[in-house]
Image 1 (spheres, each protein chain N blue to C red):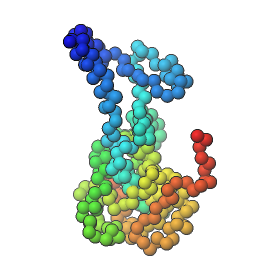
Image 2 (cartoon, rainbow over the protein chains, first blue to last red; image 1 turned 30 degrees about the horizontal axis):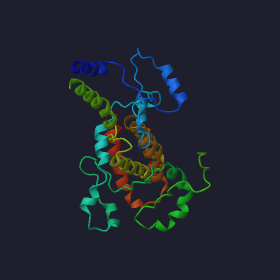
Image 3 (cartoon, chains in turn orange, brown; image 1 turned 60 degrees about the horizontal axis):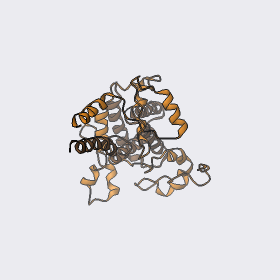
Image 4 (cartoon, chains in turn orange, green; image 1 turned 60 degrees about the vertical axis):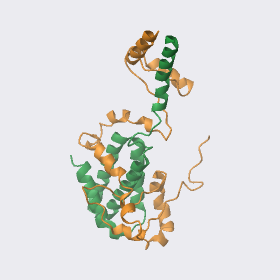
Length: 168
Length: 117
């Protein structure tokens, strides 16, 4: 019996990966009909707990048709990730007891171009709405802050009536 | 005895993958430090656009598009979306233009490091 279990374990890796049908029935139907068990394709439907990172990877092979910028050959993603992720702590450690208004003139670009800690992180919710709508609101909202070294926060969401809510 | 052991082994094999996918991946939208950094770089790029002389602004804009493309290729569409929105925010918001030299310097360093190919 133990040998049988071990054989199933080993054989399981070579066989098709288990696919749990997730999603509406009509979608599952199309997936089932599109994937044959003998063609080696594995369809993964990942959980999307934090907003859909599961789409990553597939797009990397699709975007090659445009300008030269779509070529990912020379882009050091590991180094980029390291530098980008280090943007939070630099000022915090150096200027803990200093008025934060003075931090904007601190040079943080030394050390190989790492870290952009003194820049505003923009809207905390991701912010394309701010990027789009700020042109309309910045004149009114930012006037009082023009002489202030702190940045003005964008509206937290679309103003009421700007877009209609989704029907669900 | 052997049957019980086999059942336990099979259960462990089937259950472990269900827990293995919960940790946020590096560079994913669940990586908050990374996403904050992406927003800061987007704001910085937008400020560099505003700080640039008008004839140079299309180049800065194109560099921002190229960087957004690389972000989308390597880190997914959501990170690229956040970068692009932050770029728009950096362009549109009011900021102290005394920081322009710093923003331009940071942008050039970013461009040289990640877009020079």
